[in-house]
Amino acid sequence: MAGRAWAELALTRLGGGPAGPAGPRPDGPTTPVEAPPDPGEAGPHHEDAARLEALGHAAVAGRRWSTAIRAFRMAGDLSPASWERSRLHAAAASAALCDGRPRLALTLTRGPGARPAGTTAQAVRAVRASALFDVAFHGDDSFRDLSAALETVPVAGADARDRAAFQLSALTSLTHDPAPARTALNALPDDAGDALRIAVTARLDPVSRAQEIREGLAGAAERALRTPGAGPRELTWLADAAWQVDDPASSGRLLSAALQRSGTERGHLPHCRELRAELLTAEGRWEELRDLVTRWSAEGGAGLPDRHAVALKSQLLLVCAYQGRREEARELAREVRRWARDRRSAHHAGLAAYAALLLAQADDTEPADGVDWPADADPCRDAVTRQAHAVLVRGALLRNDPEAARAHQTRAQRAGLTRFSDGSTLLVRHGRALLAAYTDESNTAELFGLAEDAATASARPFDRALLALDYGRWLRRRRHPAAARTRLRTAYETFGRLRAAPWQDRARTELRAIGAPPPGTVRTATTAGQALSAHERRIVRMAASGLSNREIAERLLVSPRTVASHLYKVFPRLGISSRRELQDALLGGGDTL
Image 1 (cartoon, rainbow, N blue to C red):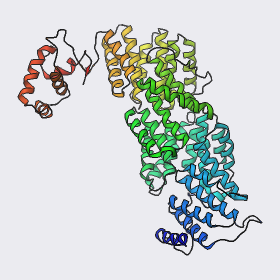
Image 2: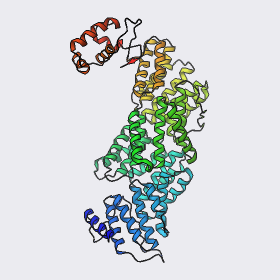
Image 3: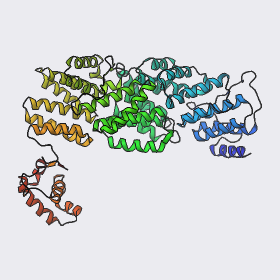
Protein backbone atom coordinates (compact mmCIF):
# COMPACT_ATOMS: atom_id res chain seq x y z
CA MET A 1 0.00 0.00 0.00
CA ALA A 2 2.84 2.41 0.84
CA GLY A 3 4.43 1.69 -2.53
CA ARG A 4 1.14 2.35 -4.33
CA ALA A 5 0.62 5.66 -2.54
CA TRP A 6 4.17 6.81 -3.26
CA ALA A 7 3.85 5.81 -6.92
CA GLU A 8 0.55 7.66 -7.40
CA LEU A 9 1.88 10.79 -5.69
CA ALA A 10 5.12 10.77 -7.65
CA LEU A 11 3.32 10.11 -10.94
CA THR A 12 1.06 13.06 -10.34
CA ARG A 13 4.03 15.32 -9.66
CA LEU A 14 5.87 14.06 -12.73
CA GLY A 15 2.83 14.61 -14.88
CA GLY A 16 2.44 10.97 -15.87
CA GLY A 17 -0.83 10.41 -14.00
CA PRO A 18 -1.99 7.04 -12.75
CA ALA A 19 -3.44 6.05 -16.10
CA GLY A 20 -0.18 4.79 -17.58
CA PRO A 21 3.49 5.35 -18.03
CA ALA A 22 4.98 8.18 -19.97
CA GLY A 23 7.25 6.99 -22.74
CA PRO A 24 10.97 7.43 -22.28
CA ARG A 25 12.89 10.07 -24.17
CA PRO A 26 14.60 8.78 -27.30
CA ASP A 27 18.10 9.29 -25.86
CA GLY A 28 17.36 7.88 -22.41
CA PRO A 29 17.47 4.26 -21.30
CA THR A 30 14.31 2.35 -22.03
CA THR A 31 13.12 -0.24 -19.59
CA PRO A 32 13.78 -3.71 -20.97
CA VAL A 33 10.31 -4.76 -22.11
CA GLU A 34 9.94 -8.26 -23.49
CA ALA A 35 6.84 -8.59 -25.63
CA PRO A 36 5.96 -11.34 -25.52
CA PRO A 37 8.14 -12.80 -22.75
CA ASP A 38 10.09 -15.93 -23.48
CA PRO A 39 7.97 -19.09 -23.20
CA GLY A 40 7.69 -20.30 -19.66
CA GLU A 41 8.64 -16.93 -18.18
CA ALA A 42 5.16 -15.40 -17.83
CA GLY A 43 3.77 -14.81 -14.37
CA PRO A 44 1.31 -12.67 -12.46
CA HIS A 45 2.00 -8.96 -12.44
CA HIS A 46 1.31 -7.36 -9.06
CA GLU A 47 -0.89 -4.23 -9.26
CA ASP A 48 1.43 -2.12 -7.11
CA ALA A 49 4.40 -3.23 -9.20
CA ALA A 50 2.59 -2.00 -12.33
CA ARG A 51 2.05 1.43 -10.78
CA LEU A 52 5.68 1.61 -9.71
CA GLU A 53 6.86 0.58 -13.17
CA ALA A 54 4.71 3.33 -14.66
CA LEU A 55 6.37 5.75 -12.30
CA GLY A 56 9.77 4.47 -13.42
CA HIS A 57 8.89 5.16 -17.06
CA ALA A 58 7.70 8.66 -16.20
CA ALA A 59 10.88 9.34 -14.20
CA VAL A 60 13.05 8.18 -17.11
CA ALA A 61 11.14 10.49 -19.45
CA GLY A 62 11.88 13.38 -17.09
CA ARG A 63 15.45 12.22 -16.45
CA ARG A 64 14.69 11.82 -12.75
CA TRP A 65 17.13 8.97 -12.32
CA SER A 66 16.94 8.60 -8.54
CA THR A 67 13.18 8.29 -8.74
CA ALA A 68 13.47 5.83 -11.64
CA ILE A 69 15.92 3.67 -9.69
CA ARG A 70 13.68 3.54 -6.64
CA ALA A 71 10.52 2.90 -8.65
CA PHE A 72 11.92 0.09 -10.82
CA ARG A 73 13.67 -1.46 -7.84
CA MET A 74 10.53 -1.49 -5.71
CA ALA A 75 8.50 -2.80 -8.63
CA GLY A 76 10.96 -5.65 -9.05
CA ASP A 77 10.92 -6.45 -5.34
CA LEU A 78 7.11 -6.72 -5.44
CA SER A 79 7.02 -8.90 -8.56
CA PRO A 80 6.57 -12.61 -7.77
CA ALA A 81 7.99 -13.90 -11.07
CA SER A 82 11.78 -14.15 -11.30
CA TRP A 83 11.89 -13.05 -14.95
CA GLU A 84 9.81 -9.96 -14.10
CA ARG A 85 11.99 -9.17 -11.10
CA SER A 86 15.15 -9.45 -13.20
CA ARG A 87 13.67 -7.27 -15.94
CA LEU A 88 12.73 -4.46 -13.56
CA HIS A 89 16.00 -4.61 -11.65
CA ALA A 90 17.82 -4.37 -14.98
CA ALA A 91 15.82 -1.22 -15.71
CA ALA A 92 16.80 0.16 -12.30
CA ALA A 93 20.44 -0.68 -13.02
CA SER A 94 20.30 1.13 -16.35
CA ALA A 95 18.92 4.20 -14.58
CA ALA A 96 21.71 3.88 -12.00
CA LEU A 97 24.29 4.12 -14.77
CA CYS A 98 22.61 7.29 -16.03
CA ASP A 99 22.77 8.59 -12.46
CA GLY A 100 26.52 8.01 -12.30
CA ARG A 101 26.26 5.10 -9.84
CA PRO A 102 27.96 2.10 -11.48
CA ARG A 103 28.43 0.22 -8.21
CA LEU A 104 24.71 0.34 -7.55
CA ALA A 105 24.09 -0.87 -11.12
CA LEU A 106 26.26 -3.91 -10.42
CA THR A 107 24.44 -4.60 -7.18
CA LEU A 108 21.05 -4.46 -8.89
CA THR A 109 22.07 -6.94 -11.58
CA ARG A 110 23.44 -9.56 -9.20
CA GLY A 111 20.89 -9.41 -6.41
CA PRO A 112 19.33 -12.45 -4.78
CA GLY A 113 17.10 -14.41 -7.09
CA ALA A 114 18.38 -12.66 -10.21
CA ARG A 115 17.92 -15.18 -13.02
CA PRO A 116 17.65 -13.16 -16.22
CA ALA A 117 16.87 -14.87 -19.48
CA GLY A 118 16.42 -13.93 -23.11
CA THR A 119 16.58 -10.24 -23.92
CA THR A 120 16.71 -9.33 -20.24
CA ALA A 121 19.93 -11.30 -19.93
CA GLN A 122 21.36 -9.28 -22.82
CA ALA A 123 20.37 -6.06 -21.08
CA VAL A 124 21.99 -7.18 -17.85
CA ARG A 125 25.24 -8.05 -19.62
CA ALA A 126 25.30 -4.63 -21.28
CA VAL A 127 24.72 -2.81 -17.99
CA ARG A 128 27.34 -4.87 -16.18
CA ALA A 129 29.93 -4.37 -18.93
CA SER A 130 29.48 -0.60 -18.76
CA ALA A 131 29.58 -0.49 -14.96
CA LEU A 132 32.61 -2.76 -14.71
CA PHE A 133 34.53 -0.56 -17.14
CA ASP A 134 34.43 2.18 -14.52
CA VAL A 135 34.80 0.25 -11.27
CA ALA A 136 36.85 -2.83 -12.27
CA PHE A 137 38.48 -1.93 -15.56
CA HIS A 138 40.75 -4.46 -17.25
CA GLY A 139 42.07 -4.06 -20.77
CA ASP A 140 41.21 -7.53 -22.07
CA ASP A 141 37.99 -8.18 -20.15
CA SER A 142 36.54 -4.75 -20.90
CA PHE A 143 37.12 -5.15 -24.64
CA ARG A 144 35.31 -8.49 -24.69
CA ASP A 145 32.37 -7.40 -22.52
CA LEU A 146 31.79 -4.02 -24.13
CA SER A 147 31.98 -5.50 -27.62
CA ALA A 148 29.21 -7.91 -26.65
CA ALA A 149 27.19 -4.97 -25.28
CA LEU A 150 27.19 -3.40 -28.75
CA GLU A 151 25.13 -6.34 -29.96
CA THR A 152 22.40 -5.80 -27.38
CA VAL A 153 18.97 -5.60 -28.97
CA PRO A 154 16.90 -2.44 -28.37
CA VAL A 155 15.50 -3.96 -25.18
CA ALA A 156 18.19 -2.06 -23.26
CA GLY A 157 17.68 1.11 -25.26
CA ALA A 158 20.09 2.96 -27.50
CA ASP A 159 21.65 4.48 -24.40
CA ALA A 160 23.36 1.21 -23.39
CA ARG A 161 24.89 0.73 -26.82
CA ASP A 162 25.97 4.36 -27.11
CA ARG A 163 27.64 4.21 -23.72
CA ALA A 164 29.41 0.98 -24.66
CA ALA A 165 30.61 2.52 -27.94
CA PHE A 166 32.13 5.53 -26.20
CA GLN A 167 33.72 3.36 -23.52
CA LEU A 168 35.29 1.16 -26.20
CA SER A 169 36.81 4.25 -27.79
CA ALA A 170 38.19 5.28 -24.38
CA LEU A 171 39.63 1.77 -24.08
CA THR A 172 41.72 2.44 -27.19
CA SER A 173 43.24 5.48 -25.48
CA LEU A 174 43.99 3.44 -22.36
CA THR A 175 45.54 0.40 -24.07
CA HIS A 176 46.92 2.04 -27.26
CA ASP A 177 45.14 -0.69 -29.19
CA PRO A 178 43.01 0.66 -32.07
CA ALA A 179 40.78 -2.43 -32.15
CA PRO A 180 38.23 -1.34 -29.49
CA ALA A 181 37.55 2.07 -31.06
CA ARG A 182 37.46 0.54 -34.54
CA THR A 183 34.94 -2.02 -33.31
CA ALA A 184 32.80 0.76 -31.83
CA LEU A 185 32.96 2.89 -34.98
CA ASN A 186 32.02 -0.02 -37.23
CA ALA A 187 29.08 -0.92 -34.98
CA LEU A 188 27.56 2.57 -34.96
CA PRO A 189 24.27 2.63 -36.88
CA ASP A 190 23.75 5.07 -39.72
CA ASP A 191 21.50 7.22 -37.55
CA ALA A 192 24.02 7.47 -34.69
CA GLY A 193 24.38 11.01 -33.40
CA ASP A 194 27.17 13.23 -34.72
CA ALA A 195 28.57 13.79 -31.24
CA LEU A 196 29.18 10.09 -30.60
CA ARG A 197 30.64 9.41 -34.04
CA ILE A 198 33.03 12.36 -33.75
CA ALA A 199 34.08 11.33 -30.23
CA VAL A 200 34.82 7.74 -31.25
CA THR A 201 36.75 8.86 -34.34
CA ALA A 202 38.81 11.28 -32.24
CA ARG A 203 39.82 8.46 -29.93
CA LEU A 204 40.65 6.13 -32.80
CA ASP A 205 42.78 8.42 -34.96
CA PRO A 206 43.15 11.97 -33.63
CA VAL A 207 46.26 12.97 -35.58
CA SER A 208 45.82 11.87 -39.20
CA ARG A 209 42.08 12.66 -39.15
CA ALA A 210 42.42 15.86 -37.14
CA GLN A 211 41.12 18.15 -39.89
CA GLU A 212 38.05 15.98 -40.49
CA ILE A 213 37.36 15.79 -36.75
CA ARG A 214 37.73 19.53 -36.26
CA GLU A 215 35.38 20.34 -39.12
CA GLY A 216 32.74 17.94 -37.83
CA LEU A 217 33.27 19.16 -34.30
CA ALA A 218 32.77 22.81 -35.25
CA GLY A 219 29.36 22.13 -36.81
CA ALA A 220 28.17 19.72 -34.13
CA ALA A 221 29.30 22.01 -31.32
CA GLU A 222 27.54 25.02 -32.82
CA ARG A 223 24.30 23.06 -33.18
CA ALA A 224 24.55 21.65 -29.65
CA LEU A 225 25.30 25.01 -28.05
CA ARG A 226 22.43 26.69 -29.91
CA THR A 227 19.95 23.96 -29.04
CA PRO A 228 18.65 24.32 -25.48
CA GLY A 229 17.52 20.70 -25.41
CA ALA A 230 20.94 19.24 -26.31
CA GLY A 231 21.85 16.80 -23.58
CA PRO A 232 24.93 17.14 -21.36
CA ARG A 233 26.13 13.69 -22.38
CA GLU A 234 26.44 14.73 -26.04
CA LEU A 235 28.21 17.96 -25.04
CA THR A 236 30.63 15.91 -22.93
CA TRP A 237 31.40 13.68 -25.91
CA LEU A 238 32.13 16.75 -28.02
CA ALA A 239 34.33 18.22 -25.27
CA ASP A 240 36.23 14.94 -25.18
CA ALA A 241 36.72 15.01 -28.96
CA ALA A 242 38.07 18.57 -28.78
CA TRP A 243 40.53 17.48 -26.09
CA GLN A 244 41.71 14.51 -28.18
CA VAL A 245 42.64 16.85 -31.06
CA ASP A 246 44.41 19.18 -28.60
CA ASP A 247 41.94 22.05 -28.70
CA PRO A 248 41.71 22.98 -25.00
CA ALA A 249 39.77 26.18 -25.64
CA SER A 250 36.89 24.39 -27.42
CA SER A 251 37.02 21.52 -24.95
CA GLY A 252 36.71 23.87 -22.00
CA ARG A 253 33.79 25.77 -23.58
CA LEU A 254 31.87 22.57 -24.33
CA LEU A 255 32.64 21.13 -20.93
CA SER A 256 31.25 24.23 -19.21
CA ALA A 257 28.07 23.96 -21.29
CA ALA A 258 27.71 20.27 -20.36
CA LEU A 259 28.02 21.07 -16.67
CA GLN A 260 25.57 23.97 -16.90
CA ARG A 261 22.95 21.73 -18.52
CA SER A 262 23.45 18.79 -16.17
CA GLY A 263 20.39 19.39 -14.00
CA THR A 264 19.55 16.02 -12.48
CA GLU A 265 21.87 14.16 -14.89
CA ARG A 266 24.99 12.75 -13.26
CA GLY A 267 26.12 9.88 -15.45
CA HIS A 268 28.54 12.07 -17.40
CA LEU A 269 29.99 13.87 -14.37
CA PRO A 270 32.91 11.49 -13.64
CA HIS A 271 34.17 11.93 -17.18
CA CYS A 272 33.61 15.70 -16.95
CA ARG A 273 35.79 15.76 -13.85
CA GLU A 274 38.50 13.77 -15.59
CA LEU A 275 38.44 16.18 -18.54
CA ARG A 276 38.45 19.17 -16.22
CA ALA A 277 41.51 17.83 -14.39
CA GLU A 278 43.39 17.32 -17.66
CA LEU A 279 42.54 20.84 -18.82
CA LEU A 280 43.69 22.39 -15.53
CA THR A 281 46.96 20.45 -15.72
CA ALA A 282 47.63 21.60 -19.27
CA GLU A 283 46.77 25.23 -18.51
CA GLY A 284 49.04 25.38 -15.45
CA ARG A 285 46.18 25.94 -13.02
CA TRP A 286 47.66 23.45 -10.62
CA GLU A 287 46.54 24.82 -7.28
CA GLU A 288 42.98 24.92 -8.59
CA LEU A 289 43.39 21.31 -9.66
CA ARG A 290 44.54 20.30 -6.19
CA ASP A 291 41.59 22.03 -4.56
CA LEU A 292 39.08 20.48 -6.95
CA VAL A 293 40.46 16.95 -6.67
CA THR A 294 40.40 17.22 -2.89
CA ARG A 295 36.78 18.39 -2.96
CA TRP A 296 35.68 15.79 -5.52
CA SER A 297 37.32 13.00 -3.56
CA ALA A 298 35.60 14.16 -0.37
CA GLU A 299 32.23 14.34 -2.13
CA GLY A 300 32.61 11.02 -3.92
CA GLY A 301 34.34 9.12 -1.13
CA ALA A 302 34.45 5.42 -1.75
CA GLY A 303 31.77 5.82 -4.44
CA LEU A 304 34.11 7.52 -6.90
CA PRO A 305 34.50 5.12 -9.86
CA ASP A 306 37.88 3.42 -9.74
CA ARG A 307 39.01 4.34 -13.25
CA HIS A 308 38.15 8.00 -12.81
CA ALA A 309 39.77 8.15 -9.36
CA VAL A 310 43.04 6.88 -10.86
CA ALA A 311 42.72 9.41 -13.70
CA LEU A 312 42.54 12.25 -11.15
CA LYS A 313 45.50 10.86 -9.21
CA SER A 314 47.47 10.64 -12.45
CA GLN A 315 46.99 14.35 -13.06
CA LEU A 316 48.07 15.10 -9.49
CA LEU A 317 51.15 12.96 -10.13
CA LEU A 318 52.07 15.12 -13.13
CA VAL A 319 51.62 18.30 -11.11
CA CYS A 320 53.84 16.90 -8.34
CA ALA A 321 56.48 16.08 -10.97
CA TYR A 322 56.30 19.56 -12.50
CA GLN A 323 56.59 21.16 -9.08
CA GLY A 324 59.30 18.83 -7.76
CA ARG A 325 57.22 17.36 -4.92
CA ARG A 326 59.21 14.16 -4.84
CA GLU A 327 57.74 12.41 -1.82
CA GLU A 328 54.15 12.99 -2.87
CA ALA A 329 55.00 12.06 -6.45
CA ARG A 330 56.68 8.82 -5.34
CA GLU A 331 53.57 7.68 -3.47
CA LEU A 332 51.22 8.57 -6.30
CA ALA A 333 53.49 6.98 -8.91
CA ARG A 334 53.56 3.74 -6.98
CA GLU A 335 49.76 3.60 -6.98
CA VAL A 336 49.39 4.60 -10.63
CA ARG A 337 52.00 2.08 -11.81
CA ARG A 338 50.42 -0.73 -9.85
CA TRP A 339 47.00 0.07 -11.29
CA ALA A 340 48.44 0.30 -14.81
CA ARG A 341 50.16 -3.06 -14.45
CA ASP A 342 47.19 -4.87 -12.93
CA ARG A 343 44.64 -3.40 -15.37
CA ARG A 344 46.85 -3.35 -18.47
CA SER A 345 46.62 0.39 -19.02
CA ALA A 346 49.51 1.55 -21.19
CA HIS A 347 48.24 5.12 -20.86
CA HIS A 348 48.68 5.24 -17.09
CA ALA A 349 52.05 3.50 -17.30
CA GLY A 350 53.10 6.25 -19.72
CA LEU A 351 51.93 9.00 -17.38
CA ALA A 352 53.99 7.52 -14.52
CA ALA A 353 57.05 7.27 -16.79
CA TYR A 354 56.61 10.87 -17.96
CA ALA A 355 56.44 12.04 -14.34
CA ALA A 356 59.68 10.19 -13.56
CA LEU A 357 61.42 11.86 -16.51
CA LEU A 358 60.27 15.30 -15.38
CA LEU A 359 61.57 14.75 -11.86
CA ALA A 360 64.90 13.50 -13.16
CA GLN A 361 65.43 16.33 -15.63
CA ALA A 362 64.82 18.96 -12.99
CA ASP A 363 68.21 17.82 -11.61
CA ASP A 364 69.81 16.68 -14.87
CA THR A 365 69.91 13.12 -13.56
CA GLU A 366 68.72 9.73 -14.75
CA PRO A 367 65.33 8.56 -13.43
CA ALA A 368 65.82 6.63 -10.20
CA ASP A 369 63.72 3.73 -11.44
CA GLY A 370 65.34 3.54 -14.86
CA VAL A 371 62.46 4.64 -17.08
CA ASP A 372 62.77 3.14 -20.53
CA TRP A 373 60.33 4.70 -22.98
CA PRO A 374 58.94 2.16 -25.48
CA ALA A 375 60.94 2.35 -28.70
CA ASP A 376 57.79 1.74 -30.72
CA ALA A 377 55.64 4.34 -28.96
CA ASP A 378 53.27 5.74 -31.58
CA PRO A 379 52.64 9.48 -31.19
CA CYS A 380 49.57 9.14 -33.41
CA ARG A 381 47.77 7.00 -30.82
CA ASP A 382 49.60 7.80 -27.60
CA ALA A 383 48.70 11.20 -26.14
CA VAL A 384 51.40 10.93 -23.45
CA THR A 385 54.13 10.36 -26.05
CA ARG A 386 52.92 13.47 -27.87
CA GLN A 387 52.93 15.56 -24.71
CA ALA A 388 56.32 14.23 -23.53
CA HIS A 389 58.08 14.80 -26.85
CA ALA A 390 60.41 17.66 -25.86
CA VAL A 391 61.19 15.98 -22.53
CA LEU A 392 62.02 12.72 -24.33
CA VAL A 393 64.43 14.50 -26.67
CA ARG A 394 65.99 16.38 -23.75
CA GLY A 395 66.39 13.15 -21.80
CA ALA A 396 68.12 11.37 -24.65
CA LEU A 397 70.56 14.26 -25.10
CA LEU A 398 71.26 14.38 -21.37
CA ARG A 399 72.28 10.72 -21.69
CA ASN A 400 74.50 11.68 -24.65
CA ASP A 401 72.35 9.53 -26.90
CA PRO A 402 71.64 11.70 -29.95
CA GLU A 403 70.46 8.70 -31.96
CA ALA A 404 67.59 8.07 -29.53
CA ALA A 405 66.74 11.79 -29.60
CA ARG A 406 66.76 11.77 -33.38
CA ALA A 407 64.51 8.69 -33.44
CA HIS A 408 61.93 10.47 -31.23
CA GLN A 409 62.12 13.53 -33.47
CA THR A 410 61.77 11.55 -36.67
CA ARG A 411 58.69 9.67 -35.42
CA ALA A 412 57.03 12.91 -34.36
CA GLN A 413 57.67 14.62 -37.66
CA ARG A 414 56.54 11.63 -39.71
CA ALA A 415 53.36 11.47 -37.65
CA GLY A 416 52.59 15.05 -38.72
CA LEU A 417 52.68 16.54 -35.24
CA THR A 418 53.97 19.86 -36.60
CA ARG A 419 50.56 20.25 -38.25
CA PHE A 420 48.44 18.61 -35.56
CA SER A 421 47.98 21.48 -33.10
CA ASP A 422 49.60 24.63 -31.75
CA GLY A 423 50.83 22.76 -28.70
CA SER A 424 52.37 19.89 -30.63
CA THR A 425 54.01 22.29 -33.09
CA LEU A 426 55.84 23.93 -30.19
CA LEU A 427 57.01 20.57 -28.81
CA VAL A 428 58.30 19.26 -32.15
CA ARG A 429 60.08 22.50 -33.00
CA HIS A 430 61.57 22.57 -29.51
CA GLY A 431 62.89 19.04 -30.01
CA ARG A 432 64.39 19.95 -33.37
CA ALA A 433 66.15 23.01 -31.89
CA LEU A 434 67.59 20.91 -29.04
CA LEU A 435 69.06 18.45 -31.54
CA ALA A 436 70.56 21.32 -33.54
CA ALA A 437 72.07 22.83 -30.40
CA TYR A 438 73.55 19.48 -29.38
CA THR A 439 75.22 18.97 -32.77
CA ASP A 440 76.15 22.67 -33.07
CA GLU A 441 74.26 23.25 -36.31
CA SER A 442 74.57 26.67 -37.89
CA ASN A 443 70.79 27.22 -38.00
CA THR A 444 70.20 26.57 -34.28
CA ALA A 445 69.18 30.16 -33.55
CA GLU A 446 66.69 30.08 -36.42
CA LEU A 447 65.19 26.81 -35.15
CA PHE A 448 64.81 28.17 -31.63
CA GLY A 449 63.18 31.23 -33.14
CA LEU A 450 60.64 29.06 -34.97
CA ALA A 451 59.88 27.29 -31.70
CA GLU A 452 59.37 30.66 -30.01
CA ASP A 453 56.91 31.64 -32.72
CA ALA A 454 54.94 28.45 -32.03
CA ALA A 455 55.04 29.10 -28.29
CA THR A 456 52.92 32.23 -28.66
CA ALA A 457 49.94 30.07 -29.67
CA SER A 458 50.43 27.26 -27.13
CA ALA A 459 48.04 27.09 -24.17
CA ARG A 460 50.56 25.19 -22.00
CA PRO A 461 52.70 27.53 -19.86
CA PHE A 462 55.11 24.83 -18.67
CA ASP A 463 56.02 23.95 -22.26
CA ARG A 464 56.58 27.63 -23.07
CA ALA A 465 58.78 28.11 -20.00
CA LEU A 466 60.82 24.99 -20.75
CA LEU A 467 61.57 26.30 -24.24
CA ALA A 468 62.58 29.69 -22.81
CA LEU A 469 64.93 27.95 -20.35
CA ASP A 470 66.61 25.83 -23.04
CA TYR A 471 66.91 28.71 -25.49
CA GLY A 472 68.26 31.04 -22.80
CA ARG A 473 70.84 28.47 -21.71
CA TRP A 474 71.99 28.00 -25.30
CA LEU A 475 72.28 31.77 -25.79
CA ARG A 476 74.29 32.10 -22.58
CA ARG A 477 76.75 29.47 -23.74
CA ARG A 478 77.02 31.22 -27.09
CA ARG A 479 77.82 34.43 -25.18
CA HIS A 480 74.72 36.42 -26.01
CA PRO A 481 73.93 37.60 -22.46
CA ALA A 482 71.30 40.22 -23.32
CA ALA A 483 69.21 37.80 -25.39
CA ALA A 484 69.76 35.02 -22.83
CA ARG A 485 68.63 37.27 -20.00
CA THR A 486 65.27 37.94 -21.69
CA ARG A 487 64.47 34.22 -22.15
CA LEU A 488 65.76 33.15 -18.76
CA ARG A 489 63.75 35.81 -16.95
CA THR A 490 60.65 34.64 -18.80
CA ALA A 491 61.36 31.08 -17.73
CA TYR A 492 62.06 32.11 -14.14
CA GLU A 493 58.85 34.11 -13.82
CA THR A 494 56.65 31.46 -15.46
CA PHE A 495 58.07 28.62 -13.37
CA GLY A 496 57.56 30.82 -10.33
CA ARG A 497 53.89 31.37 -11.10
CA LEU A 498 53.51 27.60 -11.58
CA ARG A 499 55.39 26.94 -8.32
CA ALA A 500 57.67 24.62 -10.26
CA ALA A 501 60.49 25.15 -7.79
CA PRO A 502 63.22 22.89 -9.29
CA TRP A 503 62.79 24.42 -12.72
CA GLN A 504 62.76 27.94 -11.31
CA ASP A 505 66.02 27.09 -9.53
CA ARG A 506 67.52 26.04 -12.87
CA ALA A 507 66.52 29.38 -14.41
CA ARG A 508 67.95 31.23 -11.39
CA THR A 509 71.27 29.41 -11.76
CA GLU A 510 71.47 30.33 -15.44
CA LEU A 511 70.68 33.98 -14.71
CA ARG A 512 73.36 34.22 -12.07
CA ALA A 513 75.86 32.69 -14.48
CA ILE A 514 75.52 35.81 -16.65
CA GLY A 515 75.47 38.19 -13.67
CA ALA A 516 71.75 38.86 -13.90
CA PRO A 517 69.99 37.96 -10.63
CA PRO A 518 66.42 36.73 -11.13
CA PRO A 519 63.61 39.26 -11.44
CA GLY A 520 61.12 39.92 -8.68
CA THR A 521 63.57 39.99 -5.78
CA VAL A 522 64.99 42.81 -3.70
CA ARG A 523 68.72 43.40 -4.08
CA THR A 524 70.59 42.39 -0.94
CA ALA A 525 72.96 45.11 0.24
CA THR A 526 76.63 44.28 0.62
CA THR A 527 76.89 45.56 4.21
CA ALA A 528 74.62 45.38 7.20
CA GLY A 529 74.33 49.17 7.23
CA GLN A 530 72.88 49.16 3.69
CA ALA A 531 70.37 46.28 4.20
CA LEU A 532 66.66 47.03 4.05
CA SER A 533 64.48 46.29 7.02
CA ALA A 534 61.46 44.03 6.68
CA HIS A 535 59.18 47.09 6.85
CA GLU A 536 61.17 48.84 4.12
CA ARG A 537 61.08 45.76 1.91
CA ARG A 538 57.32 45.60 2.28
CA ILE A 539 56.94 49.21 1.18
CA VAL A 540 59.33 48.72 -1.75
CA ARG A 541 57.45 45.67 -2.97
CA MET A 542 54.10 47.50 -2.83
CA ALA A 543 55.50 50.56 -4.60
CA ALA A 544 57.05 48.39 -7.31
CA SER A 545 53.70 46.67 -7.88
CA GLY A 546 52.16 50.04 -8.77
CA LEU A 547 50.47 51.10 -5.52
CA SER A 548 50.45 54.80 -4.67
CA ASN A 549 51.78 56.15 -1.36
CA ARG A 550 48.21 56.60 -0.12
CA GLU A 551 47.25 53.01 -1.03
CA ILE A 552 50.36 51.66 0.68
CA ALA A 553 49.62 53.77 3.76
CA GLU A 554 46.06 52.42 3.98
CA ARG A 555 47.31 48.85 3.86
CA LEU A 556 50.05 49.34 6.44
CA LEU A 557 48.01 51.67 8.67
CA VAL A 558 50.56 54.51 8.47
CA SER A 559 50.45 57.97 6.94
CA PRO A 560 51.33 58.68 3.29
CA ARG A 561 54.10 60.98 4.56
CA THR A 562 55.70 58.03 6.38
CA VAL A 563 55.62 55.95 3.20
CA ALA A 564 57.24 58.78 1.21
CA SER A 565 59.93 59.18 3.85
CA HIS A 566 60.81 55.48 3.74
CA LEU A 567 61.05 55.49 -0.06
CA TYR A 568 63.20 58.63 0.02
CA LYS A 569 65.67 56.88 2.33
CA VAL A 570 65.60 53.59 0.42
CA PHE A 571 66.24 54.93 -3.09
CA PRO A 572 69.95 55.79 -2.53
CA ARG A 573 70.61 52.39 -0.98
CA LEU A 574 69.09 50.71 -4.03
CA GLY A 575 71.09 52.94 -6.37
CA ILE A 576 68.03 54.50 -7.99
CA SER A 577 66.52 57.96 -8.11
CA SER A 578 62.88 57.43 -9.11
CA ARG A 579 59.91 55.16 -8.57
CA ARG A 580 60.08 54.01 -12.19
CA GLU A 581 63.38 52.25 -11.48
CA LEU A 582 62.02 50.10 -8.65
CA GLN A 583 61.19 47.13 -10.85
CA ASP A 584 64.75 46.97 -12.20
CA ALA A 585 66.06 47.32 -8.65
CA LEU A 586 64.07 44.28 -7.48
CA LEU A 587 66.89 41.85 -8.34
CA GLY A 588 69.21 39.68 -6.30
CA GLY A 589 68.67 38.56 -2.72
CA GLY A 590 65.75 36.15 -2.89
CA ASP A 591 63.06 38.26 -1.16
CA THR A 592 60.27 37.80 -3.72
CA LEU A 593 57.39 40.12 -4.45
